[in-house]
Amino acid sequence: MTNIFPSLLSADFLTLNDEIEALEKAGVDGLHFDVMDGQFVPNISIGFPILEAVRRGTSLPIDVHLMVANPEPYIDEFCQKGADKVSVHVEATPHIHRAIQKIKANGKEAGVVINPGTPVSMIQPLLTDIDFVLVMSVNPGFGGQAFIPATLDKIRELKNVRSAQNLLFKIEVDGGVNAETAQQVVEAGADWLVAGSYFFNQEDYADAVSRLKGQA
Ligand code: DX5
Ligand code: ZN
Image: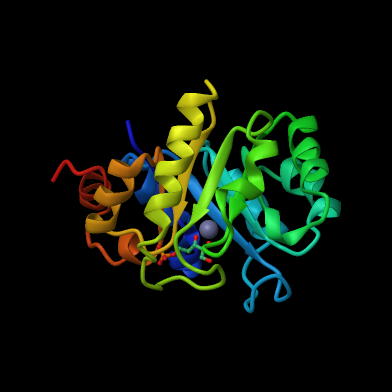
């Protein structure tokens, strides 16, 4: 069953509590929380105070995507402030395995993220230690960009590696996901879909969930 994680980056922050309530009613599987540092990516977004507030507002799983250079010193605090899943970019630190260990030491689900220009082979040594791989289907930093089709091959490759090596990690896809690209990435092997601009542009969030799951 495909899981849907709307990216709060595209929500209305002035009415965030209402947005979260509407997302819960629409039956989403969790909330995707994009943290950008202005270093690893050319944009700055949200951090600890908003995470803390969102945590108070929902019991849905919170999926924190750290687009942060050298994120290790911040991992404990993201876990303490409410993350259920934390993902770190392999491109963002020379010590990716240590970053994964820090997430696991907090008892949270750990994910490794690969940019569109990064091959699956870069994370092969991590695949036994992580809970999920987040495959970026746009260059991170902004919502509303177009899906990069070459991502589909990497999703297929990850799915093949997972079954060949009897591994259990989930495959999450983030960037340019809409009703059409959702179908393509799910066919390729994606388990979890992140959707920002497409999702929040739909009038009815329950419809958005059904469309992304290919049920409408
Ligand atoms: C991009 C972020 C995404 C973003 C997705 O850097 O990681 O989570 O919010 O937005 P859409 O779905 O509009 O591409
Ligand atoms: Zn994201």
